[in-house]
Length: 159
Image (cartoon, rainbow, N blue to C red; front, side, top):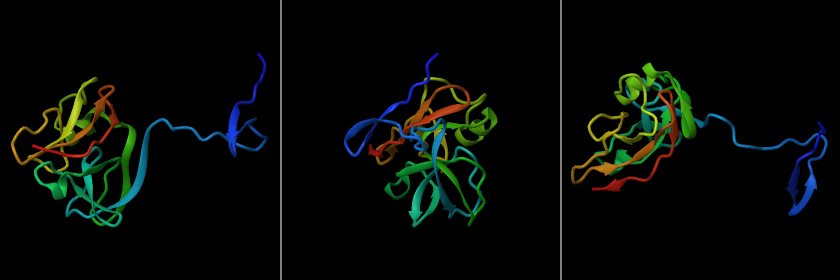
């Protein structure tokens, strides 16, 4: 089989990929950012957070505009006052036990199910969208399997 160089766009012109150049392509997995946990307790993998200060986050909750703007999900356990990794987009893969803790499920996620931010428990994802006036519907993403969530956080919709 012949080896071929990919064609790329460089300064608006098509050309073969040059020796020493690499392709920038989406990575498998989640897009992540380092932020500081500003909550009193730890954030566990999968918990949903909002930005509260510069580079700081707290557990999100869909019952008030100040906490409903979900930004990311914790990728690991992050202690109070410590910077840790949060997933903002892409596919977040956790164990079924981790999803059970973060989303209150049993046996992990359900493929094809859309998950929302809880209006009753801070940081929790749920299959049931809020339905009470004054609460916010915040879509977090859709499950690809029992262990994978395709993160697709949407802006809050006030009921």
